[in-house]
Amino acid sequence: MRRNRGEDRVGYGSTVKVPFGPQHPALKEPENFLFEVDGDIVVNVTPRIGYVHRGIEKALELRSYIQDLYLAERICGICSHAHTTCYTQGIEELLGVEAPPRAKYIRTIIAELERLHSHSLWVGVAAHEVGFDTLFMYTWRDREAVMELLEAISGNRVHYAMNTIGGVRRDISAEKTDKIRSSLDFFEKRVQEYLHVIRTEESFLKRTAGVGLLKKQEALDFCAVGPTLRASGVKNDVRADDPYAAYGEIPFEVIVDDECDVLGRTVVRCKEMLESINIVRYALDKMPDGSTRVRVPMAVPAGEAVSRVEAPRGELIHYAKSNGTTKPERYKVRSPTLANIPALCKTLVGAHLADIPIILAGIDPCFSCMDRMVFVDVAKDRNWVWTMQQLKRNTSR
Image (tube, rainbow, N blue to C red; front, side, top):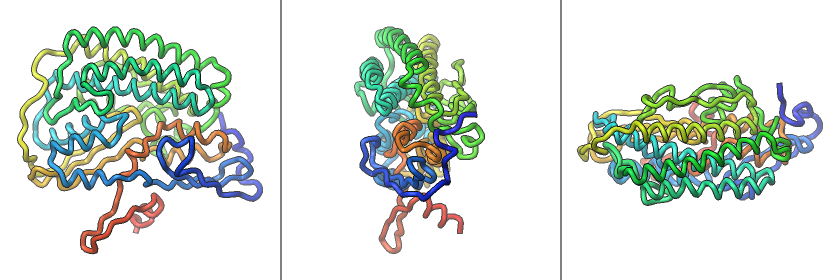
C-alpha cells in the first residue's frame, strides 16, 4: 500500500505552525490553512474558510425565481451550467413540469462540454503546480477549442445562460452540430496525448505518484465526491446513480482508478474527458426533434425539492423551499469543494511542505462555490460567519 512521503516521520520532535494563505501563489482564490509541521512533514491541518463569502444563498431568497437563475449561474464561473441545471431541475420539480426531451439532451451536451473545459483547465493547473509548464500551456491552448464551441452554441465563453425553468433558451442547429463533431475529433487526440504524457513523463510522476494519498475507506469515511472519490477506487457518479437530463438514455462508463493519489486523480480526469467526448457524440446522434422549452407560471407552489447533478468537481446539491410566492423561502447549495475539504485535510497529513500546492490542487477546489454560509440574527439585526469547527461545536449542542 502506498504511503505519503515522510509518513513514518509524523509525530517526532517539536512542531511548528505554518500559516498558508489567504494570499499565496498556489491559491487561485483566498483561503487559509494552518499547518502544524514536524520538520517539513505536515502533522495536522486546520482549514479556515469564508474569505470569498458573497451571501448568495440569502440573495437568492430576495429575488424572483427567474432572477435567481442568473444569480445561481454566478456561484461558479467554471461550472455555471451545473449550477443552473441543478437549480432548474429543483424548481421544475416544485412546479410539476418536465423539460422537453430535446432540451434534456442539450443540457447534457453543454454539461459535458463544460466538463471538458473544466478538466482540461485543471490538468494545466496541476502541471503548473509541479513545474511542468509545457503541459500547462498545451492544455490551455487546446482548451480554447471547447471554449469556442460553448461560445458558438450559447454566445458566451462563461455563464452560458442556456438553462431556463422548463427547458433551454437556445437550440443546437445542424451547422453547429458539425462544428462540435469536428472540434471533438481534434480534442480527443489531444487528450490521448495528455494521458500518455502524465503516465510516462518522469518529472510529472515524481511529483504526483504516492502524493496526497486517500485510501478507499478513507474516501468513504470523509464523504469525498467526484474525481477525488473515484480516484480512490469508489464507483460513484450522480449521472449513473441518479440519472438526470438525458443521462438515463446515454450509455457511458464511470471512470474509476485505484491509485488513490494525485496521479490517479489526474488519470481519472483525463479519462473522463474521453468519456465526455463519447457522451456528446452519442447525444448529437440520438437527440430527438421537438421544442426546447415549455411555459411555466411565475409563482411556484409551496413545497420542498432537492436536486443533484454531477458537476465537474463532483456531486452538487441544491435545496429549494417555496412558500407559494414568486420568491423562494429558503435556498441552500452544497458544493463539491465543501464536501471534499475534510478529505483534503486527510490527504495533507504526512505530506511534505513542498507537496502542499499540488495536493491542494488535486481536489480542483473552487472556494467561491464553497464560501456562501452566513448566519443572520433578524431580531438583533446582526450577521456573522463561523469556521467549520465553530459550526460543528454549535450544531452538536
